Length: 228
Image (cartoon, rainbow, N blue to C red; front, top):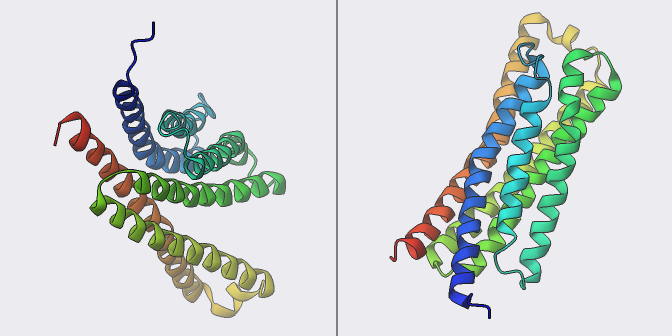
C-alpha cells in the first residue's frame, strides 16, 4: 500500500524545486565565465570542451529538478519545456567554443558562436518567463509582485540589447571603412563605449535573474522548510 501522502509529495517537489533554483543560480555565471574562457584562452586545451559542457549540464539539471513541481499546470509545463529545449540547444552548440578557439578564422565556427550567443539570450528570456509562471503559483504576494516587475524589466533590457547589437552589426556592414574614417583613437573610444553599453545591457538581465532565483529559493526555504 502506498504510504506517500499529498503533503509529503508536495514537500518532495518543493525540495527539488529549491535544488533546481540553486543549480540555475550557480550555473548561469559559470556558463558565462567558462564559455568566455573556452573561446579565448589556451590553458583549457588539455580538457578542451569539458568545462563548458558541464556548466551547461548544470542548467539542464536545474530545469529537470524543477519539473517535479505542479506537473498539472500547463503554462508552467510549457515554460519548462521551452527552457529545456533552448538549454539543450546551447549544450549542443557549446563545443564550437573550443573549435572557434583553435580556428577563429573559420566563418562556420564564427556563425555557430553567433547562434550560441543568440540562443543564450533566448534561454535567459525563457528563464524569466519560467520564473513568472512559478511566481504565479507560489503564495507569497510580495515575491509575485517582484517577479512580475523585474521579469518585465528583463524582457525590455534583453530586447534593447538584441536591437543594439543588430544596429551595430548593420552599421559595420554598411560602413566597412568606418575605422579609417574615425581614426585610430576615435575608433578605440567608439569600441570601448560599445563594449561598456553591451555589458550594461547584457549583464543587467543576468544579475536581475540571479537575484530573482535566489530570492525565490529563500522564500521556499523560509515558508516551508523553516516553518515561517
